[in-house]
Image 1 (cartoon, rainbow, N blue to C red):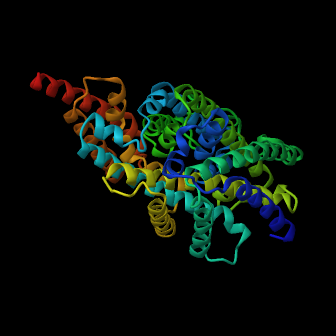
Image 2 (tube, helix red, strand yellow):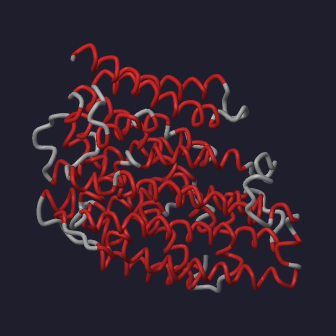
Image 3 (tube, one colour):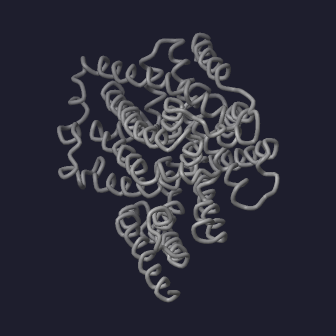
Length: 459
C-alpha cells in the first residue's frame, strides 16, 4: 500500500467518523436510537447489517471457484429477508422491546426467555468471531508484515472506538455513509471485471456453460455448487433471520410498523444485488487471475489489480466500513440483550453498556484468532442455536394455541438435532441437508404435537 492508498483510505474513514460518530444523548438513544428511524436510514442500516465481510468473502470465494452460478447464493438472502418481511417485520415492531429474547419470556416463561437469550448470544459469539476473522483477511494484503492476531486486535479496537460514543445511533449513522459508498463501489468493480476479462474471452474462458447460468434443477448436484446445498441455506435463513437480534434491534428502532415492513422488503432486494454484483466480479477476476492461492482473497485481489492508487485505499476503507458497522451492530444488540434478559439492574446505562460491549469485543477477537478457519462453514454452524428457536418464535406471534411445553420441546429437539447432525454427519458428509430439510419440520412438528397434547391436558 503506497502513500496515495493510505490517503484515500484516510479520507473515507474521516468521512465515516466525522459524519457518524456522535455521543448518545441517553440510554434509549444508545440502545434503540430513540425508536424514530425513518425509511432511508433504516434501509441503509438493515442492508449494511447484512452486507458484512464474512459473507462477502465467503460468497466471492464461491464466485471465483464456481462462476456466475454462484449468484444462487445471494438468492438465499432475497428469499430469507422477504420471508422476514412477510412473517415478523410488523410483529417485531408491534412488540417493540429491547431484545428479541423478551418475546420468549413474555409469551412462554422467563426461563425459556433466558435460554433463548443464551442460545442467541452463543450464536452471536460465533458470528462475531467470523466477522473479525474476515476483516483481518481483508486487511491482510494491505499490512503483510503485521502478525494476524495483532492485526485482528488493532481492527477490533478501531471498531470499538467508533461504536463506543453513540451505540446504535453511531451504528446507524455510519451505516448510511457506508451504504452510499458501497452502492457506488460494487457496480464499479463489476464493470471493471467485465472490461478486464473481455480481451481474454470473458467468463467462457474460465467456466463451462453449466456454470454460467443459475439452473436449480440442472445444478441440483453440480460439483461446483450444488443447488441442493443452496436450498438448505434458504430454509435455514428463513428460520434464523426471524430471530436475529441484530435485525430485531433495528426494527425496534423504526418509527412505526409500516416503515419496518417497507425497509426489510427493500433491504432484501438490495442485499441480493450487492452480494450478486461482487460474486459476479469475483467470477470475472478468475478469468484475469486464474491461479489465486486462496479464493477467499478474491476481493482484496480485485482491489489491488483493478483500482489505481488512492482509489484502491478508498475502496478498502469502504469495505472496512461495511465490516465495522456489521460488527458494531452485533455488539450493540448483544449489549441490549444482556440489559433486557437477565434482570441486571443498571445494565441499561450507557457506561455499563460500553463495558459489556468491550467484553464481547475481546471474546470475538479471541474466537477469530483461535477458532475460525473456513468462514462460510463457521457462519453456517453458528446458526444451530438460532434454528432451534424457530417454532417458538413464529408460534409466539401467530398461533395462540402454542404452549410453554411445546415451545420447550421444540427448542430442545432443535438444539439436539442440529448438534447431532453436525457431529454424526459432519461437514464432509453435508450435514446441512438433514439439519435443515429434516430438522426444521421436526422442530415444528414437535412444537405442534406437544402444544396440542398439553393444551388438551390443561383444558
